[in-house]
Image (cartoon, rainbow, N blue to C red; front, side):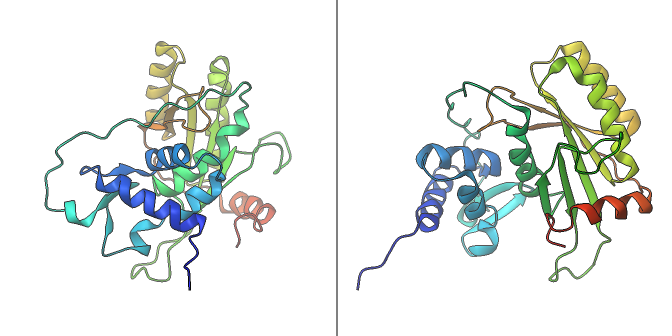
Length: 252
């Protein structure tokens, strides 16, 4: 009886073959980019949903030497002989929207920074009022297998496509600290260098995370962390108020 090969099987096999060619390992975002080039007709969610937990699905073959980095176990005791190769260039879309980057950044929070166990795109005015709604909302909660349990944490992000609105974006990221434990500001890498330097300094002062990205490639934003967000304690009233609004999205 013939064995049927599913999309998930094909993507998994290709991922293993890519890892076998890269002693140093491959970061989640780069692996997804390469797989999407190999399988352009497969939905983005199918690719990410297949590879995000390769290390737990194949613990005898694949491990994570650091957050968001996949590597074959056979290379564990071998010094990497080459640097990671950049992902292949993807065709620039004819029209780019800010919302195109929400889902990729949600995946980045979960699978590369590993600061969330669940993250969802939001945007719009889901929370109502004038204090705004973050573009990405995530939570981190301990898994059942964790021996030491941690309290639930909220991680949010404000993403800006227009480099002329960086001051406004920084103010929004600060406002989100009212109901989040960590707040990130995500801005285009091609913003004026002096503006990025000022944001870098302000983010360090206020504990806001700063991420740079390629605003021309929604399929491969190449998120790069500049400042990691500092954890703080938000106002529990506003945390609960907002989580109730999107509890279904977060599957709570």
